[in-house]
Image 1 (cartoon, rainbow, N blue to C red):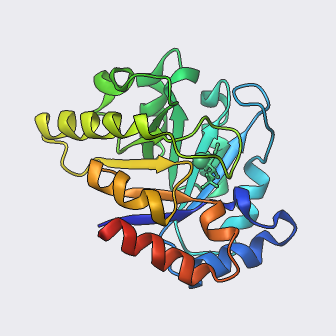
Image 2: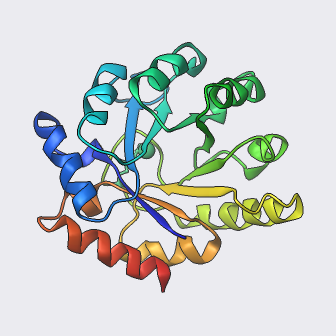
Length: 219
Ligand code: DX5
Ligand code: ZN
């Protein structure tokens, strides 16, 4: 089953409660929350207090994407704030295996993300430990960027490795430039969690936008 995760990065930050409620009513499956620290990526967004505030306005799982250095220092805070899924970047973790298990020990789904220039092999040794791999389909930092097609072969490779180790419920998430025109490509390659910021919150009719992406993904 394909999950759609509207990213609040493209929502109205002054009306986040209403925005996540609309995303839920419009058929979103998860709410994707982009945390940026101005170091790992050239942008700054939000922290645990905002996650906690958003949590009060939706019953959907909060999918927290940490684009930060030293994510291990903040995992407990994001868990306490109401995250259901926490994804850390492989590039930001010297002890990636330890950080993944830190997330799992809190009872959450653990994800590992890789930037467009990071090879799929960066997640190979932890594939059996994670619930999800996030293949970034843009360079992280901003919404509304163009999809990078070379990322498709990494999705296929990771799906193949998951089959080899019988990790059949591994989720593969894609994030960046996902819309009606790219959803089919990533789903065909093996992605099953689709993040969309601009393609949902940039449209006046969010329900129609989510429906269109879902239909494109399901072919
Ligand atoms: C980018 C973020 C994304 C962003 C995607 O660094 O991780 O989640 O919101 O935005 P769109 O869907 O507009 O490319
Ligand atoms: Zn994201």
